[in-house]
Length: 291
Image (cartoon, rainbow, N blue to C red; front, side):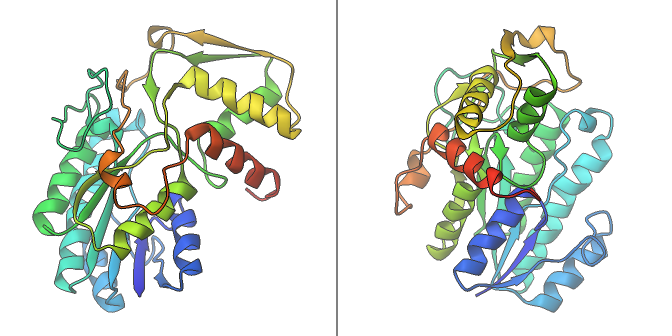
């Protein structure tokens, strides 16, 4: 199986490529010189030349707050380029898998969002990803769209690594406690994506690790697990704060837990709990000085 992965150098892209390589897939990982989402003509040319069996679109504009001031760039990458990737995949009869986000929801729910629930993004980033989903579905009706949440991995920038850095530098961390979601290890997500590809699934799916937490609870768990593993951190405290005490340009959903029932029915193993996966990721990070 030949798989072309966009965004292969991102935290999810790297773990997905590891998963695919382990499974014996032939990988095509174009860099920005080969496939520039701001140069539309490069997208179709690269995919046509590779003629893959699958195209997995991990590339995205993910700077949530910056998107409020740069809507053109966010929509160009998250909607327009996603459409072109899907069109090019369809033209070579390749399967199409597109990564989306919990930010397509408003956060007004008090129970996990199902795939069929109405969307209602609150930010430019969320709207660009919502319109990207629609564009991919229109261009490639048999595509797989996977919404996920609160991604972290040993490689790349993410909340876990930020908390570890701040816990080494500061005596106090102030973390928002009134936004709730499900932390997701990119390695677990990558394994689930492989299984969806193997089953030639189609449609919209949700994937996150099991359970839920606030950002404050997540940060407390990061520090607790890291200290237990021997990470050198200051003996500081973590203080919960309200969203209003940490204003940001983009509005984030207060509750964005995703229902995992649909995708679980297609997976070989139960979806791991987020705390269990956090521990495993920290163990990996501890053994990876270059991460």
